[in-house]
Image 1: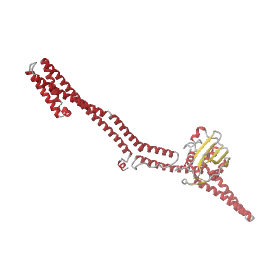
Image 2: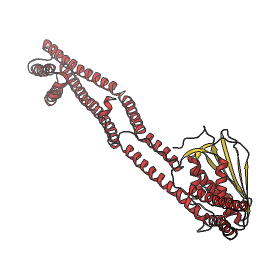
Image 3: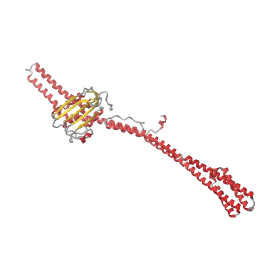
Image 4: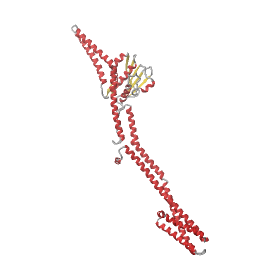
Length: 481
């Protein structure tokens, strides 16, 4: 880990470093191959030079033999020509030959050429055809030395070229393997530093899109671009959570606005009753016995309690607060929500039925949020049944273990099959323009999801709709952040 501190801190620098390493590796491979091919090229050139020297000496020896046999001037002249070519080649490629065979061998080669030329000249000038046997033997010896030296040069260069080729044969495979390893490291590096963090961000962002506003765990160094991206997303999540809370509160206010007429009528009834009781007490106080007066006082108190309870329920529902998890009775929440819409149900001639088929312990959830969901579903059913009908709420155990369910069904017109999959989408509504925003069910769905539950809908056109809320029992709550 101590070496990691020397790595670049920003993602851009790390990626650039990876590409620089790849470039350096490729450059090293190219340089190595260039060096090998350059060396091979030089060896091939010297091999051609050695072959040329060898061929030159062979031709020189051939005309030497002819001259020995026939004493023709033509043979001598050709021999001299090839001898001169050999001397010129030695002078022209002196540096190359010295680098290949060394200074001593080069001097020896030159010495042999000079001796050979001198002996041939002496032979041509002073000896008859049958004489100078010793001189011919000397010439043959020097010529053989030249040929041996040239053959040695060819053999040495042939071995050098063979060695270079043997050295270069595995080089492409080794280069390929090293390149694969390096590319594997780069892919692993990019996967760990870029793809994996982005995949995690994508996965956790999808959870945010589903309504779970959980912060993404910061990743890497604070100078890293991924870290900055996560921080920006977390700020966005915070703002979205605030906006959702504001949206939930706006839905509460909208629901209160919808209930205003009915609640005003419901509050007006106990106030009128109190007014009538007080009027009776004022008019008949002297003729009224104590028991009758006590009964009227008690009735006035009951009517005041009734009005207070209505206002209390409304204030409790409308109070702006963060979701608060607490022990909650499902039946109690249903009853409180029913009291809020009771007058709306009466005005629309809708019969309310409640069934509790299981005895649940209190559930640990956001009671205010659940009440808002139920109120939204109740109001949707009331608006769907303009000519009256039946609203039924059933509380029972779900098929899955450790789960409760609430079924809210009505006898309204139902939902078209093509709209079933869209009812929980934001801004989708089948109501007339100006009546709904299409946010109620979307908000409700997110509230239930935040409580660890889920919502489903079943409906057939003309046969009403049934919304089902599934909630985990206490001790099985799914953490939603």
